[in-house]
Image (tube, rainbow, N blue to C red; front, side, top):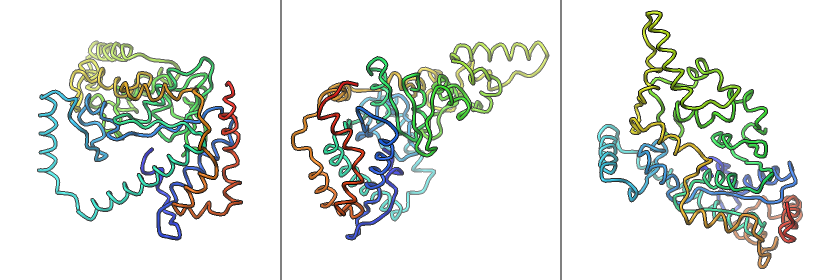
Length: 356
């Protein structure tokens, strides 16, 4: 979960920022209204989340002030990492201490609210995973890859990277759009087939995660010269072969070859991936082959479909947690009861351990 998802700054009567807690459960409540869900999972980014991707690409999420450990890096990559950090310190001024203090305060508020939400979800029979170094997207990818045959899944997230997991059984509810993306409407909404989400990011990179793509090659060029990605699955080899063919044809016409096409063929990037750009980017981006530790795999497999023990899980406990943390918006017992009404169906199913 990103900090922005808990950005509601509503304060309690004691001055605590509790808006994020209320908004989280409000959004979950609204989602529960949209379908008859048998299981509900919440996957969290763990401590040092993204570490496994950083070990493949030291620039990963540097634009988000992420500080990763270096235990998985070779001596060469540690040296590269050190030089990059030294250059940043040399060329950029140290961050304003006031801004640093504000960032720390924001993170402290986020983690305080997150921990309360985690405790509340336990009382509501919502299954959760949080593991060191593992990103929430990888848990989702693992679940989709190991789901039961014909199990229908709704992924709720604003992260459109997850649309790569769409299939006849999997759809994505994009909260900012307040709509579902499916195999049928992805092309019209996003501009290309969901089957090419990984290919697009492997070639074009992802600025939000600081992943570099092929130099001089962006989404506009991709859609212009490879319009087939709108309608069907396209392979990387097809793109490379077509890039070669485009420049061969231009040479026949005595035209200058297109630089981006040469870059595709020759694996040219401004990123640290170098000639291994395709292999590294695919490993980082492809959620159908998630980056997981053994601990994370053991964790998710232990909760997938397994019965949840009802002992010590009650709405009374939930109410006490909210009361003790001054979530004033739900202190009124009548409002509390009405607010969590949609969760009762989930709780009842979990207690009975009904089949899908």
